[in-house]
Image 1 (tube, rainbow, N blue to C red):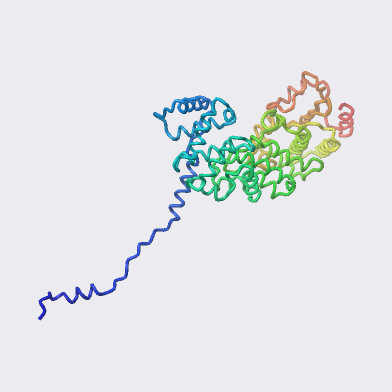
Image 2 (tube, helix red, strand yellow):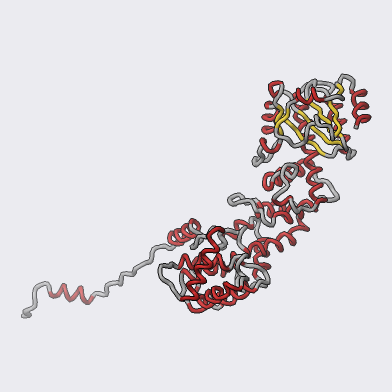
Length: 445
C-alpha cells in the first residue's frame, strides 16, 4: 500500500488539470482621455503670460542670469515667462538681449523633454510673425524636437504637421479655418488655447479673410466669418477685425441687401465693434471711408424704419402713413444724410420686443432717450444737408434748424428733451395739412 495521504490523488488531479490562465483586462481608457482633455481645457496654458509692466524686469533678470550663469531661486515657469518677454514684439530684435535669445535656442536643442520644451512651443506660437528671424530660428530648433513634445501639443502637431515650417503653417491653418463651419472652435479643439491672440492664428486670419471674401454674399460664408470674429464661447476679435468687416461690407458696395439682412448685419457689426457714429476708435479709426459710408447708410435707413415701424404699430392716425412715406421717399432720393432715434420709454420697450431681432443689441447704446412729457413722445432726428430736422410722434410738430444754430439738437446724443427742442425752435410746422407740411419741409431743407 502506498504511504501517501488519502487526499493525494485529489491533489495530483488538481495539479494535473490544466487550469485556464486569468487574463488581466485593462479598463476602458475613455474616462482617462476625457479627464486629460478636461485638464488641458481648464488649464490650457502651462505658463501664465506675464503682464506688460513686468516684462522688462523679467527680460533683464534673465540677461543677468545668462551672463553671470546664476540660476539660484528660479523655476521653469519663470524661465518660460521670461521667454514670453524676450520674444515679444518689443524685445525680439533688441541687440542687448541677443545672449538671452541664443540661450533659449540652445536650451531647446539640449533640454530634456518636459515643461520647458512644451512651454517654448507656446512662445513660438504666440510670438509667430511671418518672415521674422526669431520665428524662423524657434521653428528650426523646435522642429528638431517635435517628436518629443508632450500631450499638450501633440494634437496640434498631428492636425497641423507644418507647425514648425513658418512659410507653410499660416496657409495650412487658414485652410483648416476655411474648411470648418466654426473656425474658432476648430482652432480651440486642435490645441490653440487663445486663437484670437496667438501670432500664428493672426497670420492665418489674413489669408482666411482674403479667401473667404468672394463668398460673403452667401449666408454660409457669413456665418463662418462671424463664428470666427464673434465666437459664441470666446471674445470678439478686435485686432485685425477691421479688414474682415470691410470685406463683408464690400459685397454691398454697389448693391443693397434686403431690409432683413441689412438689419441683421448692421446689428451684428454694432454689437461687436460699437456704433461708428458714436465711436471713432477701435476698428473705425483706420476704416475704409467708402465702406464705412455703406454701413452709415444702412444705419440711417434702419433708424428711420425703426421709428416709422414703431409709430405705425402704436398709433392709429390717418395722417401718419403719408408722413411715413414722405420721409422714406426722401431717404430713397438720397436727401437724408444721417438719422438718429430717441425713443420714449414705451416705444423703447416695443422696439426691444418687436423690432430688434439681435439678442446682443444694447438698447441703451443703440438709441437715445426722450425724457420730456413722461417719455411718451419719440423723436426722429435727421441731418438733411446743412439742416437738422426733428420730427416726433403724436402731434409733435416738425422743427427745422440750421446746422450751425447753437440751439439745434445734435445727433447721436444719449438724452433729448422734446419740450426744450420745441422752445429753441424758430421754424416749425404741424402736420394738419400733409400737402402744405411736405411742401414746407422741401422748401426749408
